[in-house]
Image (cartoon, rainbow, N blue to C red; front, side, top):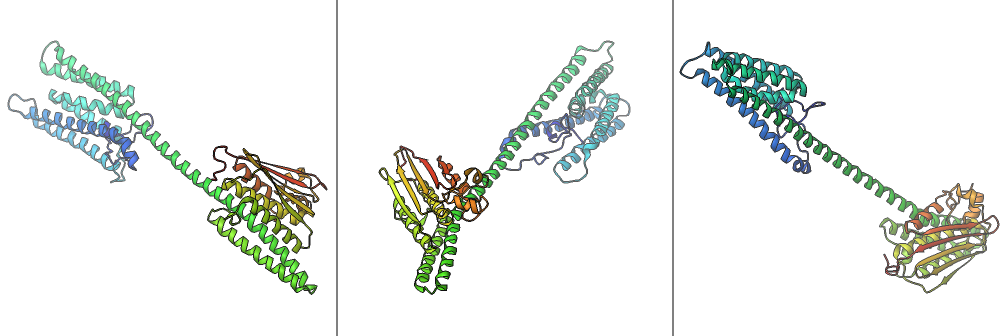
Amino acid sequence: MSATPALNTSGGPGRPGVAGTGSSGAHAPRDPLSAVESASSEAILRVLRVTLHTGFAALLVVGVVRLLAPGPRGSFPFLWSGLALVLAAVYLTGTVLEHRHAAGRIRFNPRRYGLQWLAAVTALWVLLLVGSADFAWLAFPLFFLHLHLLPRRAALLTIALMTAAVIASQWSASGDPVPHAAAVVGPLFGAAFAVITGLAYGALYREAENQRRAADELRRTRQELAASQHEAGVLAERERLAREIHDTLAQGLSSIVLLARAAEQSLAHGDPATAASRVALMQQTAADNLAEARSFVRGLSSPQLHDTTLVEALRRLCEETERSAAAGGAALRCRLEVDGEPAELPQPHQVALLRAAQASLANVRDHASAGNAVVTLTFLGTEVTMDIYDDGVGFDPDLAAGAGAAGAGSAGAGTARAGHDGGADGSGFGLRSLRERVEALSGSLELETAPGEGTVVAIRLPLDPAGGDAGD
């Protein structure tokens, strides 16, 4: 209900609202950051609030004391004193209700009756001013109330009228035919000072509100950024697991399925020795995939790179590809060629190249109907390249591009037979996954193929000249 400047922390549109919020008002600090940001402005507002209320009470008491003091008295001093008590009660009721509402202690909102409260306080003051000029100085704290409850033009008009009433009261009390200069200059100076102070407070309040809004916006932005970073981390981890699953478990399970079928055929033809060798190869493939699964769940490198080099891992991969193809009844010859002086590559580079070779050779074995596959690893000092070539059936890259052609030469037959899917698992994830791996290391991937002409997957990974040999 009251509109004391220091209490006014939740004003309506266009101007500060009514007063009454203390440190626990509508915009009380909600965290340590807010407390630091708003400490100085809240302290200033609190001082203004206390000063205004104390000044109003002191001036009202002075007026009552002078009214009842020994000596010549005006008419009905006790009547005017009683009216002063009514004014004090109305003023105190409005400020207390506003403070309790702002602190959340009551549900009743006295701010809706702010103008009525201001009119009642002003009317009581005018009646007291008629009874005794000693209440004239109460006009100065009332000036602040008008400035903060009324629009600026209306407030200036009421302040001018109140100033004229104070001058008239002082002139009437003096009994002089012409008002004394002090009786005119004093009220005018006081009114001007009140207006300037009120406007300065309004600017201070708006600045405090702008700072609070900026801090809230910064806090919201920080929370949104943290949430987006968390979501990006979740998506990145999901992509990592998807790539690892596709390039390891999916390929391994595909090999196990083929070996199981081949073992079943060997048993049907009465060849238990061949069936046993294929079952043994199935067990080894399953064991290798189990180790891979445990490794990538922990975010580690491939077990095939533990205590060995990339060249040795690729050579073993070629041998395993030949054995797996032979177990499935295919005559596939796979060899590794190394150009340049082998160098120790960063771990992410080694993993990316090994995964690319695994996915590519698995697709060659399962889909390309190739007789030969060649993995060429080239060390060029500032970069490392790897080409996976097969002489299989090839495919139309334009058709496969629309379906996510697989990351190896395999995509050839796989695309032709699986609706341009391009993946050994029929998911179309192979080439996209491989491109993401390579591009994450600032590399490039090119696919060269045509129906009946085989396929080449060419990968290039740049190396940091200063630290490319140190590992990641």
